[in-house]
Picture 1 (cartoon, protein in one colour):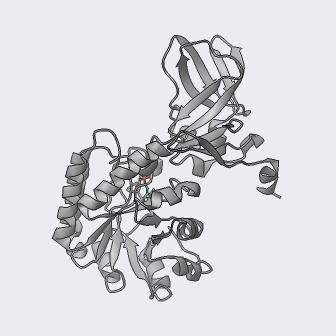
Picture 2 (cartoon, protein in one colour):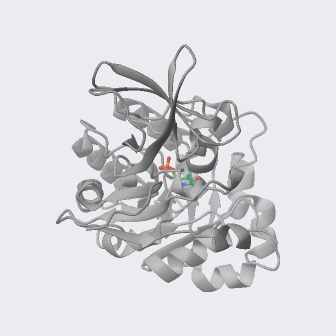
Picture 3 (cartoon, helix red, strand yellow):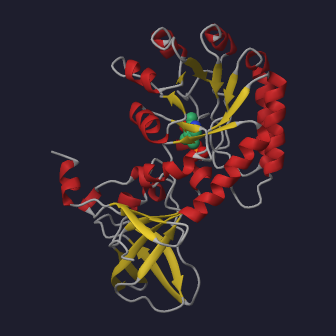
Length: 366
Ligand SMILES: *Cc1c(COP(=O)(O)O)cnc(C)c1O
């Protein structure tokens, strides 16, 4: 078996199956449907595999919508913060449901979407995000309608709402309390709908999450309001399935042992910089190194790692959790070689599904 040249993202299908089996169990036990959120993960070469466990996809743009329609199939939800006039007919052609972000967009486009189900984004004005940048309930948020009078104006034209307010929420008690708040504040509206999407951000594939409680709570919610619930797991679908594999190019001692690798935070794991996090690196052994990228950015640092043996030039380092919001954000900053994409099959064999030669770099601009 020939491994690709580093850097490459490595998707582990056995780990993906473990997540997918939880998703499938939850659908079965709760009656809720599960759609993959493509803004988190759009590596379509594993869609054939994921399709058996999920109901379809949801999107945040015309291109994500088209990809979901073409490569995943099944049920396809179309959402966008704002559709353009030139996009709407094509979007309606791919979608089973279209979800508008504002009453203004619904007014503008509901006529064009009359052949498919329409919905509106409801913003409950609270969320579980502790990070302002990613908080849909931040002050003056543009994400969805919250005013009950405005929501009521939409009711003759929509059959459902989408409420996305969780963010990596692994706390079932918090989910339960917040859903109760939604039931209390918006119950009169929910009763008049056919479907409610509760969005993504519920970390139900995590270790020890009380899946049975979540299933029961979702069932109760659906029974109470007579709606079909949808979940839109992004991160939960692919968490802990993928690594970024890199090689050590140089080791510098500046009072600290710094290992420079053939990758970059900004180009290949951008969220580390945005959310000021450290990469998940090996941390066993006595030998400490700062793992740093090869771009000119002074702060291109993955984080601190420890190894059993001293690192040598050419050693491979494996960086965890490289699927969600990572592969979708890779870019050509500094012209650093773009990681190939490889899949570890369940029999252990590794298959390279995509590599990005110089022509791809050149072709990304003109
Ligand atoms: C980002 C997003 C998701 C996926 O969120 P995760 O935290 O990755 O599960 C789902 N629905 C909507 C509307 C989103 O914006």
